Image 1 (spheres, rainbow, N blue to C red):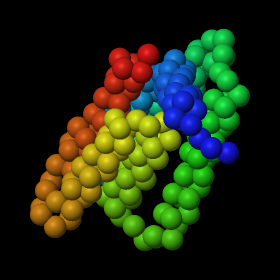
Image 2: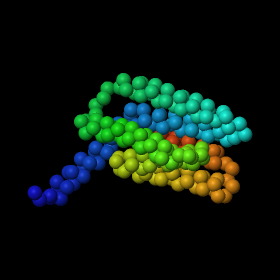
Image 3: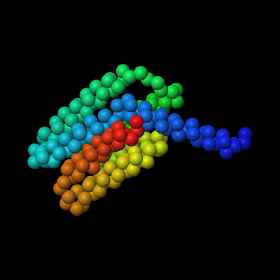
Length: 199
């Protein structure tokens, strides 16, 4: 079958329309608010971790409370936004399920890798988890043809790696404050960008 310039333009237009529809769907379903929520949680937990470095027994509780707040807030947001009428196409539903299973697979593989990397220490585990999540951002950016998500994922991952290496080999003592800015600020900024630019 010969592809004419007109049919190629039409197919490209369909692809662009699908990507635009996906971006609008992601933004309209509360993903922007979820990212901003997790950004605030990360900022609060990293700053508190820095302040509690002399009392490490409490740090785990800080992150447990932060994750509980993040997961509870995320569930509430998805419940609120889930009540909106769903006008997604069949292809959008399939992509949504693929993204859901991608996150499940990433969590399973990430935990398997943590078991294989044992024994690890907190700084190593933290840098690993941050870069793993940012890898997901890059993949989602590739799926949705979003340069912003690709650059954000790569920038936060590079920032986490730089903070890790500086702490390990350069005597840098502000890793947690650095990650509050780079990681938490990156999540909050990506949610704000979605809210403003993807609607």
